Length: 234
Image 1 (cartoon, one colour):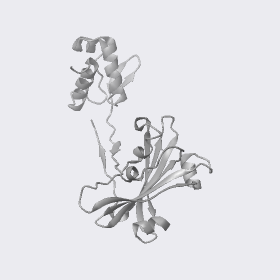
Image 2 (cartoon, helix red, strand yellow):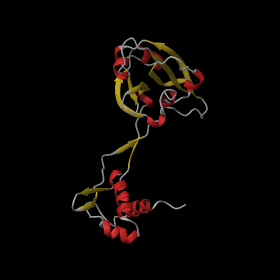
Image 3 (cartoon, helix red, strand yellow):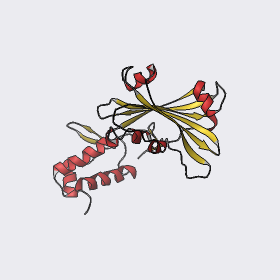
């Protein structure tokens, strides 16, 4: 089965934009001309144009038409995979704690739960050649009747940890990245001096109603921390 007709319109116009056949600010063909070119209905053309608007390729001016967008050169896509590879020799994930506790003020604030609501805390370390490279701490609201399976948690991603209560497909993840000076448990687990720099990746999982269902912090030692993002100009 071939692609839907509206996707053929989307692909054709994308190609014209990326090949610079039409440039930022140029007008897209009228709906009537697109109907004739692709031999489709106006509804099909409008569906294709809506996709292009949503993806940021074109914008619409009511009563005038559709125009090619200026490329957003300041937009980068950051891919963050909390699960370091364990396929290489000498690399592993160690589960150091799974417990049910009362939340601290900070945990309760980020999960938007009262002080008497218990949370599951999961702590893991990521080890390479016997050296701890990252310390991972996750907090999830505790619900009676949902088992805590340590074997599953050890290698689970954050969304997978809360999947028993919420659908992964309904979740969104918010990231906040910052640098800080190590202290207390962080410096002890990472075996670094208090005050040494660490990179912190804060993750917050939200449900379909934009309510927090998980909060966590992952600490990376200074010498091993870094970010990589990709800018796409098409």
